[in-house]
Image (cartoon, rainbow, N blue to C red):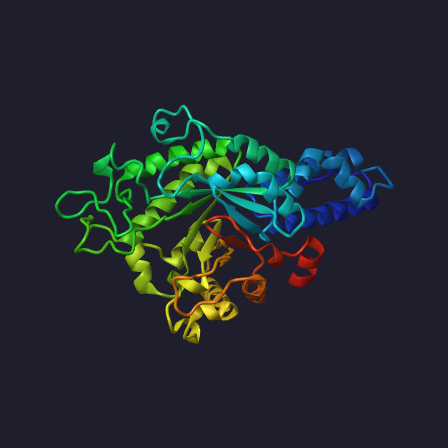
Length: 412
């Protein structure tokens, strides 16, 4: 920065102010990971630099007055609108959006500040209206997602778009050649009746990109890719996949493509991943998700570390579902160890936590407030601050949630 040498004392004082404000802004920039906010902060700093000469002779302009004058009120409002890395969220499926007022009330009365909403659901259908010719066949003709997002904005609730990526039953009939196939040329259908877009087919990349652009237009600030992988049953005996690149390589290339294409849109790019891939190279190769690679490519990553999804013996637990604290603690500390070894910038890590009872397990327990808080405590004890609860029907354990004051005290 260059300043006119008019009065040494005044210049020195204002340079100090510049330094203090710069540090304040950079601290806020580090605290707020949303790209749009960071750019607003940078813009505010440039405004400060442009106006500092006009204020050089102002004798009694305090730092807070300077900030108030120089940072646009709309910028300050946007800084307050979105959460930092301390996301505390809930997943809400489309069929529950009719009850959005109830979830808004829950968020306003508790620590919850984020909702994850489907934009491409588990069947592959789009939950929003569109006239995009590439998408319209697979989109709903009746949606009030716009209204939901507006209400969320009014209540300062951060919107995350959940985009189920390669699991897709919607496109199978229209585009069979773009699906994963067996060795006889038939669409591969797994034991659950699911079909999958072939991650090796870049036409599917372009299709997903078109969805992302529409989602950004709707007003989402973050796109969270789910099922950004291969199904775990897709081995060489069952499916016919190219062998010139591994599953990990092709998923990495897809992530690189998406992040590059969406870079101009100033949207957070994140993904949900299997919890086991944090440490299991075998699982990583099966589904195509390499944890160390993905944390260097994404803005945020959400490991699905549900205790019920771990097998016997994980983290020295005979029955992981009975040990919510130990499982989350083990997984998050393993994540920390991997990230500590990376030289590159890395994604913010925020786990999905279990708010459901795994009745299909012989050795399970009811997941109530105690079990949910144990998971959250494990996140904080691992020096992480964000989390999202998963319940596929959005029937959450309200007793597990703290109000804002309690949450601040609990996290400190």
